[in-house]
Image 1 (cartoon, rainbow over the protein chains, first blue to last red):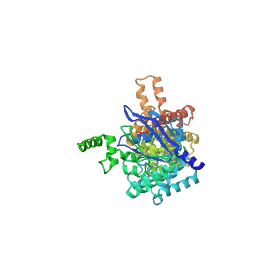
Image 2 (tube, rainbow over the protein chains, first blue to last red; image 1 turned 180 degrees about the vertical axis):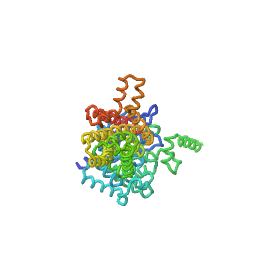
Image 3 (cartoon, rainbow over the protein chains, first blue to last red; image 1 turned 120 degrees about the vertical axis):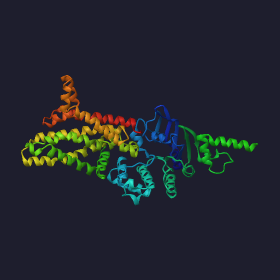
Image 4 (cartoon, rainbow over the protein chains, first blue to last red; image 1 turned 90 degrees about the vertical axis):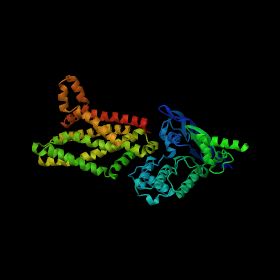
Length: 270
Length: 241
């Protein structure tokens, strides 16, 4: 009984809290007033059109960019005042899964393991584990620049998982993967999301249904939707039967779907 | 910091960059010292020809090393990875710079056979040679710290290279005797001295002559500290560009 209570308390823990996030580049706002709260056990899908501020938001919560305004805490550590300690708690797959082109997968992962504070033997064990976890055995001695897009993405994922972080931020983790690889990575993310806080950005709405417990849509730097995938889908008018999520997405980010929907409803009442 | 240093230092040898760089440096150093500098014809047991040409040789090749330091990280996007790993920004700047400096020291050390040749042929002033090599190593660090700062500013390696050569050329020129002679025709002595004292070449020449003055050493070390500090500030400011 006590165990159950403890588990649910753990699961409810907010691992990523960002409030009033704002980022201004010159005169233009990339992000204006976003709040993010992600608990352990949640996989949050971060959606929005290109240029909506997804990557900028992710870059702020991972400590790459400093917000113009707002507060960020990771596992209870203030990222802005204690950046190094806070960065230890997260794993981050940046957009495009960058890595050093001339290094082999193994060398690159060893570098990340060392950067994460593991010494020789521990580093080797860690590297072995993530190589196995994302199936990189076949390419471990190949240099990064010669890898296919799918393997590059997986190397990036392996790097993010190195220290078994409680918070995972993944910027388009399945971009460029074939359907089999997508399935594999989604299964992995679902698995990881059981006791961690995972934030992933994507353009593929079916992915949100497949792996996310919650979805946030941002448009022009502000949150326009926050809820479960089911809630998101239910926002679509009843007469839409196919690609309902896409419809909601367009409705919320362009207003286009909304106009069409209202026109149709009017037509049907007449 | 040592983790960044090791990765960077190894990266030089992972590509043909190291081999190309070292071969060209040695070839040109040899050419300047023995052929153009006329080491044998001078009939003097010193490495004056080598030390005289080394700043100009550095001017052409050190920016080729420093240009990639940050511009490359920007281009490949790895800067995002590096900054979000639990490193202090100053560790990144220092680790990268020290790796570049260490690599240039490897190149300089490969010219030690010149010294051995000299000892074999005559009886050189080893003290002067030590201070000459000290000056060379300090100059390399100084020039690389300038190049690293410029590389931090831009995403484009070609721009980083050209700008570094231009800036370093001006700082060398300010201490070049011929320039100073021209300046002497219209400027007062005080102005000339002030100008010359800002030049890396003036301090390099002083050290090369075998007089180790702490002020000259401080010029190089202080310059490196200032440029690396600025480098950290620029990276912090422009990391997302």
